[in-house]
Picture 1 (cartoon, rainbow, N blue to C red):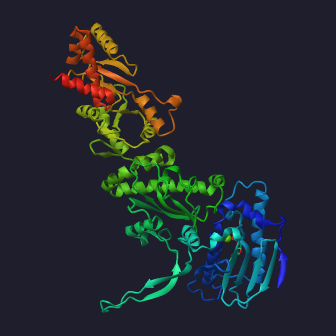
Picture 2 (cartoon, helix red, strand yellow):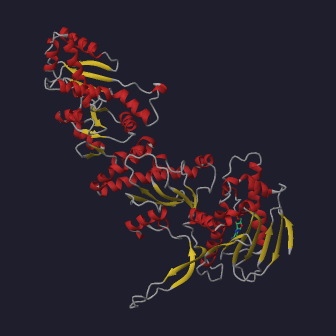
Picture 3 (tube, rainbow, N blue to C red):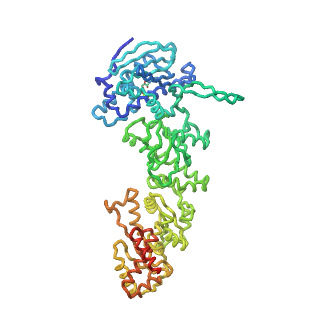
Length: 630
Ligand code: ADP
Ligand code: MG
């Protein structure tokens, strides 16, 4: 037996570890299981290369609670340690990591999640234990088993012990303030959270399994039951396999394994697999999203060698892909380090751009393989694609190959197809091609109809980030502009060099305009006289593109905050068709009261077609209309 003092300059390190890392203390279990897993896979490697001449077998890791003794133990069948190795790896190396940590964070407890990065792994046990024992026996021939014990002071004891089997058992004597870690439910919760896909099987207790009845058994035969190891993890999840080994069904099953509460199948998956210049595997899923931007739970999970790290993937996964689900596993992502550190990390940056590229490539191949199917899914994936287009330039650059522009008639164009199609008809007199769009096919129906009458295509762009997307397209594509169908009269949205015929002379027009302005007497409406076809509606309300777009952008955040806290005022143009019969009638009307009534009735009709007539205005309108039927 030998006793010694851990080589440390800080008087008593353990209370400090406990204090500094308090918020994260549950991760001790993950750290100890990671060590047990490492020890097992190391032994496997040694047997493969012929270094270790032992029977590797089918090793498991066992987690056990002894409530009476107040211990929690983690036992592996890995390579074990000799006395010298304990001296070296536990007393010196592991501890230097702890020291480094304390040096850096002595004065600031701010950055709590730092354990793995500083190699504080093993010592994190002292966050929950008042005393830790290690029983270990090396795989090496003739090595003697040893026991190490330390009660949280820098003094430890190392002595020979009885242990017949190879491997290591860590026994934690749980501290009074951490007794929750003696609860079966708590440990099961932690194992499920962090080690659901651990590389080595983890046994936690026993479970009863019912054996299938032998063939030809009697009807009332009782099925036999057996007690078997309760293995809590799946050591070979889908992302660790080659895509060629997996069928669509396997991916869907894995999706459900990851998110047991998700009942709907994902739309499709992307299998990630790269080993240069960094290592990364994973599977991302596109769930059905429609226009939902607020996904709180069931997020992408980040793993390091099949050990759960976090589902806060901001900074690692580009923002637009946070709407997806799935798993990313990379040994190159530092385990459990602070946000700011992660974002500055070179490997992490490369990972983010790799994932972006991979998603773009997948879109291209989905589109090329089966356009019909891709079009059908468009409504559910567009929000991710559009978000990607406005936020990641690399993604945007490729988007011409997979971003779709659907029309109100149910056609889907790629950008170039769209421009080619509409260029001959929708180019205005200044040579600009105007892309007409609607955001709501029902509400903007009459405007869509006018545009269709002219032979124009109208896109249906209804996701909340469309204003931003349009801005992006306008600024990067040449000679195009977007206009919502209700932004002005269709003749003004795409101005052509056509002679205009005016039925009224200038004086009449001025009188008409004045009459209407006086009758309406509302700042909200700007009267705009237009020489349109006599069959066009006498009054139409439009909302200028610029104002409306700013308003929309403000609603989805970002841009257009120029009107301050109050938001944007409601503003409309009242387009009056001066060639309509109605305009002629108005001018002829002698009785001022009747004239005002006519104007207001027409304005109400215009509002009605824009869904703007509400409340008392609507009640009055209906009443008036009935009376006029008498
Ligand atoms: P790290 O895992 O980052 O090396 P730890 O503090 O978790 O740091 O562990 C320190 C060292 O102790 C390990 O590198 C390993 O050599 C040894 N060790 C810890 N747990 C075990 C175990 N269960 N079996 C064998 N060796 C172990
Ligand atoms: Mg470790």
